View 1: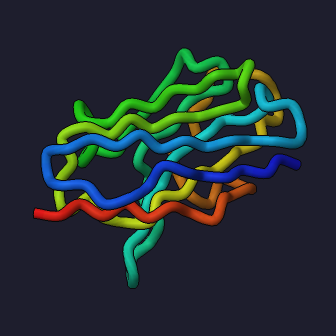
View 2: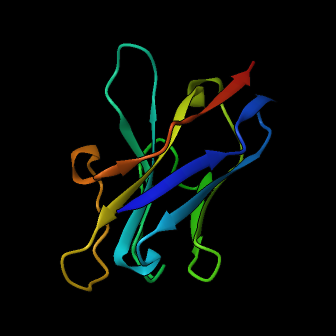
Length: 128
């Protein structure tokens, strides 16, 4: 299995930027699809972005397209989420997840139930 730990959250004004980091340890990092999700109280965890094991394929939630960028470094076992033009509605706890591939492909998992491993989350607060 893999362990993931998020960092980089905080308080930022609307229009600002933040970069979240996710450090993974454990089994071979390249056997995992990685994703960022977010959740607010009383709501389900929603996809923010996902990235295939190779980094070639990515997907984004509709509300963040054009503003957020996901990337990964398979040497450092890291995943990043660059968040620009932040809005108050981006305020949430952001979670990093890992989906274990059964066979090698550029599949990107987009549903929370597909991810077997999660970090503890990092709070992002965007003030207006």
